[in-house]
Image 1 (cartoon, rainbow, N blue to C red):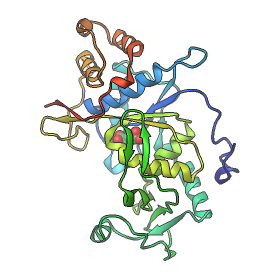
Image 2: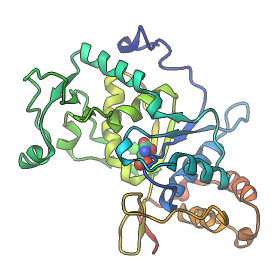
Image 3: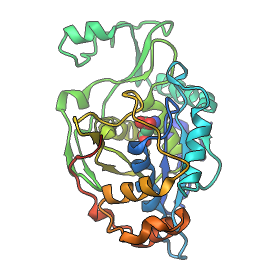
Image 4: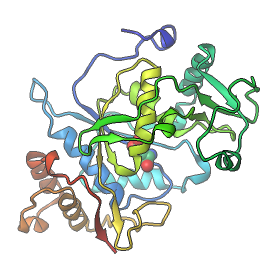
Length: 312
Ligand code: GLU
């Protein structure tokens, strides 16, 4: 049923259910590293091992989260796509670039503003920090203009608990869950929460399997789905790969890129990290054979919900 919020322009929301639709949504702020390979592989295998009534595998989409140009690394999008291909993670449908979605994001923001579900905010991070770190709605009644100000959602449907396919029941900080969070930043860039939810709706995503570093934002995403009166996907968060010192592998802390020239070792290490019972001689077979085996034997329940140390 079309949602009243989008009844005119977005009459196609939500689309008819097309079975399992998963996605991997890397930010092009660096190359694919072992941590992101784990997330990509888990979401791919979960989609491809799920068959519909006609015995068709689930769809797996790739979306490039390029909404933050200052943090982008030149050429990273193409390199990420090349790596995914090399690792046998072939996507369905066209790659969606968030940088091409500006019109849709603005449309959603305009609709929310019209419904009085957002307000503009001039508070800085430092000011919020002095007030305890959680935004207290300071600007809610100030009626500020949208020039040089952030746009916040009036968070009427705070969600502080949800069931995760891998982590089980997740509880979030109550105050944080109730915060009016940012949909558009002061610098004019769209916020991750806005873009990710709008695109998950637009692409009719049914399952989001990704890294545990995104557990906290999930509660906000669920709140935003509820505000937009849309059915959220099911979420599953795989443990984060860390260094022996306990640092998360991430682009920000310069995790090394995976080796595209010899993908088998990283692929097998990623499968082991995900608790899959890899056979010892698999190191000698082709990437496509490993992937075919992994789809056939995928056991989501084998993924440990605790963080493991894997890499130095
Ligand atoms: N682009 C985000 C990242 O690379 C992930 C977004 C998502 O999976 O929701 O961390």
